[in-house]
Length: 215
Image 1: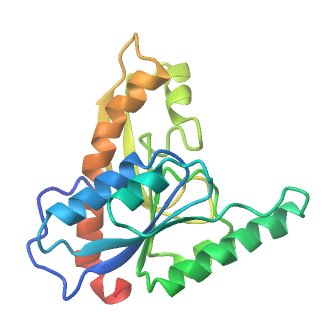
Image 2: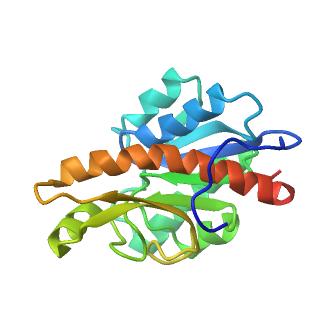
């Protein structure tokens, strides 16, 4: 599904795919996805669960205000073995995803690198949006890295999630200019506009092409 999809789905799926969105922060992208779903009659996907890994994630309040079940699943205490700690966390996340009868998992500002366990449970029905034109500037500091490199173009990428750091198959991208006086904040704001448009469109197209697998 290369390139940038556009427009609304032309043939509805048999029933909306139940989605979960994983977040770590403000949840602005999550809110954009849910508003897209709620404002487009016949949308082929609906968010039924939002999970945050941080109790102070503002996105939890946003999800609740939109009528979506939301919960925080923090990591176990730091004194535990790091590998077992991550695995225990992801097993709890997986239990809630399955209890909600989810067919598609969307990462939206989720600041955790998934272990092979959760990737193995949900790929290929596991998508992420990243604020750069991958493969350039993967990881948690994409805007900082783009500015430090002197790049004159950045943007966002929707990709499938694998076990690497933003290395999964690219589904679509959008580009934005980087201006000489940009700060991380100003670049992030410009990229965010495109993220909020691109991600829902990619999910629309992904579900139309993969309904047999996600329902």
